[in-house]
Image (cartoon, rainbow, N blue to C red; front, top):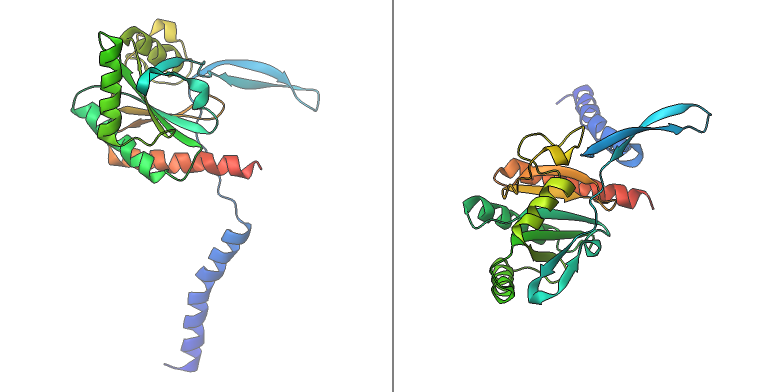
Length: 230
């Protein structure tokens, strides 16, 4: 190869390397993660003295369920970073979603800000409910303090799905959020992402591997934004 050709080839190889180093050192990656369930738009005064419209999004209100061993589990235990929610059902779709949770637990095992909550309908008695929670927890290998199985009456779970998490049977999870007009749906194949401000940030189909990959990416995006604020 002639010296001139060698120099040209070297420059062609060097350009993408320099571009990567520049972007790595000075660039910032902004990924717009949506916020769901907008309730209304308020007018707020700006520092310049004018007014602007600001969307107010629904926040998941505190709730409590029965955890393994019969202890009460309050939602504030989950909300210091972000948490994922699954409504369990004893069918194939529910099993696929729970296996996806097992994968997510392993993927984010070292990250204490990521927690998982699987909501299970109560059995006819407290003893049977506790036995069911214990069995499911052992079956899927939950890590204490990381992945919680919590039980509540079916009506309570439907109310949570409808009024807090926006899982409804008739409409998508977008503006305007009017839960009283839409029946709740537990949708056992769906996973939800809730941030540290109690906003719903994503809905994912656990039966679709690409949706689960999207969930992993968006968890990392949220964690990045938390780190970037400090």
